[in-house]
Length: 498
Image 1 (tube, rainbow, N blue to C red):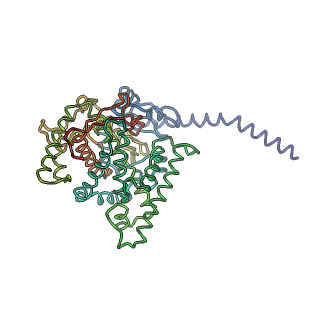
Image 2 (cartoon, helix red, strand yellow):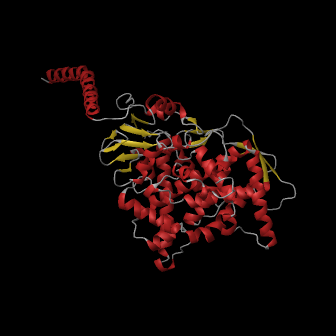
Image 3 (cartoon, one colour):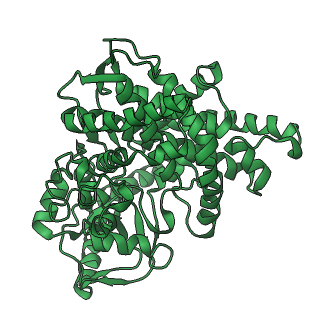
């Protein structure tokens, strides 16, 4: 009896195994038929949906030079136009390299479109991360960030902290030795954000340990979301857990002091005192702001260090601008930069804008259609993913003359030397390095302040050379220098700014 049952089960297993390929083939066939029927009913943009499930994701994410849109985008735009359909990240997708559609998408956040990042991003940054939140919760989290990054705080407390951490990093540079400019930029922004968010002092054991954990965490954010032992993603999840325990311990230390005694000098203290967020929400907020405030700013500074040696005239004009500021400070008997000094950095703002345009730290955004939308005769079906590609607009030769050329003067209005706030309205509307609409980056002003102050002390004190001509910024899709951007730096003669 047992033998007959065993034989019967074995026979059933064999039948299932034989039928499985046919069932899968039928399933895939039905998916393709359904997709074809949907496309015939709608006037979708032209394009190629690629393979079922995988679509064209692998080709889209293939690394390429950050100062280009990459072979995938170039070929698709050439073949289908600036708006095309594809299958990316496992979902049917409308890809936009069109400036008008990109603005339309960002301006209609919450009405026609909403943020929609892949699940793996939420898994590693946390479900309460500002990057993945939508609706009222995102608005509330963003308001907390904006209140803490207020104009008054930027002018006073943050201005001093930015300069202090800039000088700390630059003073450690050794004459004529080769070092990684990317690592130095990351050291600067990490130390600044650790101090700004949790009052952690640079160089202390707990700060250095947190930095190591964060490096492992970041490797997982940009890796394939494969949660298996030994993978970068699994290691990142483990680092995330340790980082959150560290932040939680800092929270408990503050709470033991009593609400009335909590110091508001850092973000953690400010949130504990002025918000009603849960512990889990605070942990994810702190982690996501550490990620956003450190990674993007450090890449932007590294890009400026990379671009400027190729444009000696820009370095010369920067030195003239900052020498004038330094002379005025000396005559006034002042040592620290203030907000009035920052507002005098007009050409520096042009350099910052050009660095962000050409380097494209944020290359594209993840959105989803909330309703059926029609744009320029094309249908964008409800539920489809929509990718506004910011980099494609910034590198469009119809919008920017010689877009692959680093030209800070393009941001001056009639060559008047005015700051970036006065470039033409057409250029302004096509320039979106910090996104736009209700999800405009809350830290955009802090990022520009960091770049300006770092550039001020860099050009006043150093001449630097790139040591690896082959090391250039690549999009993975996050922008990174594979070899760390090695440079040598020499101090200017008769300079004592540091």
